[in-house]
Amino acid sequence: MTCEFYDKTGCCKHGHNCSRPHPALELSNTLIFEGVCPAIRNVSNILQVNFWNNVYEDLFLRCDEFGFIQDCALSINQNHLFGTFFVQFKNLNDAQKCYETLKNQQYAGKTLKLRFGPMNTLRKGVCIKNLQKRCNDECNYIHQFDARDVAKELFAYNDRWR
Ligand SMILES: [Zn+2]
Ligand SMILES: [Zn+2]
Image 1 (cartoon, rainbow, N blue to C red):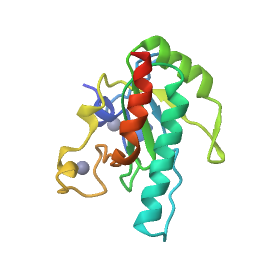
Image 2 (image 1 turned 90 degrees about the vertical axis):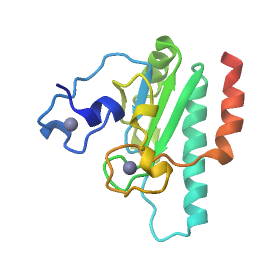
Image 3 (image 1 turned 180 degrees about the vertical axis):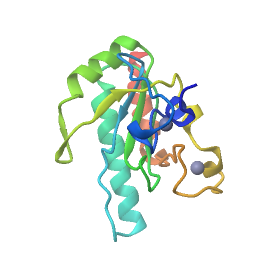
């Protein structure tokens, strides 16, 4: 049996030390950008939200040029999932092109840590309790940044690939 957290989010706080396997994938339609978003502390909520919106928009647009995006999420849990961006392409080819192009690029002063995720939908990895504000930051499921300010326009733009 594989690790439930890895299966649903492509990430696990135990990493290589997990008692369950985390089989790496050579290709899938889901890409995981690990820890892209540096933690910024001691800033107001408004600044924090602006910052996350910018990161979301920026990464979305970098992925957008490769094809139709079905879903994406920026995780803001205060644990191993913090600042991890997930993108799910409709077509494997587009995910592959995105991976090949971006895998060694710099982002926020670091080389992107990019890999394919095992999940065929992001929805299963998103924490339902958090959507109802009944969870805590140590949760191992994705606490998705609410990107409604930018997402609608970005997805509308991406729709040209449909
Ligand atoms: Zn695990
Ligand atoms: Zn949660």
